[in-house]
Length: 186
Image (tube, rainbow, N blue to C red; front, side):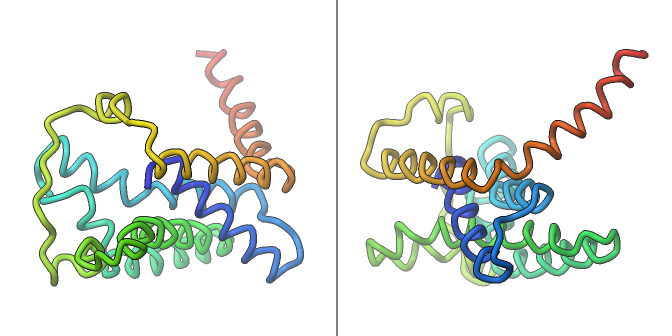
């Protein structure tokens, strides 16, 4: 999945889960934590593989179930420590939704070897080399059915997010307001 597919998939799952549990949509801080969590595995693995060549593939270390468990425990612990347990859980939820999202296409194809990242390093990952930048990667995307599906998924998630009251937007606005005056003083 691409970034917009991951955040859309994670948000739709999370809002369904939250509504089932509480009867209301996610709050702003949780929506932001979920969004960051849904990108987290790629923010670690892609640069370490594609840019620095430290990892064998863009789906290895941070895509591993072993890492996901450690991140989940750390996120919930930090959330509890700072009185934001639900935000920590939302981050962990986003992280795991990323791994599930990356498993959907291989699962549908019946290509279970493409899901070996779940068990990395116990199961080795195929070495994938990219000789182009992130920008070149995104600029070279073709309008495949998969890409169009993820764009449609993002559009649906955007509609649901707006229906939910655009959670997270107020948190970002408040944060920018607090930072803004400090920037003006410098």
